Length: 157
Image (cartoon, rainbow, N blue to C red; front, side, top):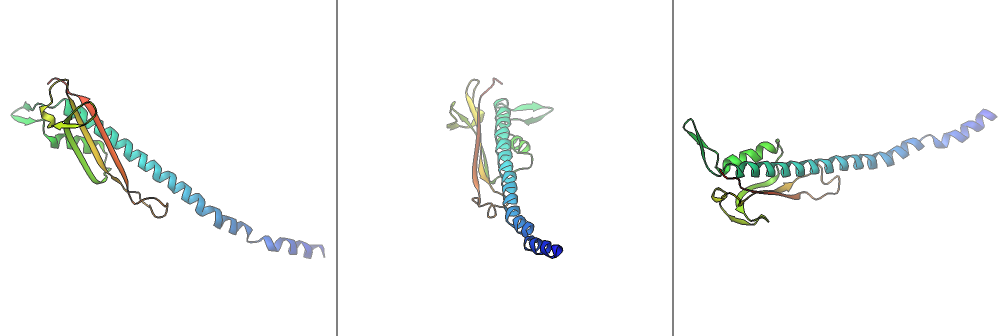
């Protein structure tokens, strides 16, 4: 009689753990994927900031062309763009744009960056859209705008 009573008490709780897991597991996965996606956004934002700074550093020290062994290089916008792209470490933004120009201390465009004299400013600006890997699952927008810029005083070449 006692064994039968135990069976009656235990049998209604058989699927309780399965139901609890079915409720909690999707919420935990959603939270973990959200943390990963936000971390990836911060990583891309940090990479863009570093790439803009390194591109600006290159531009401020290469406003005049350099000729070594008969090969002239240094002050082309493509060289600055290549430097920025290298520091992006393979990450790119949708509709990515890299601008290099002479600016004031606030980053307002004043003209061609190769015309900047010592003490004047050069700005490198990266704009684009970050695209999340799984935006619909995380209830996120399909893209987030990113803009990074760096302004540095030009060195005397």
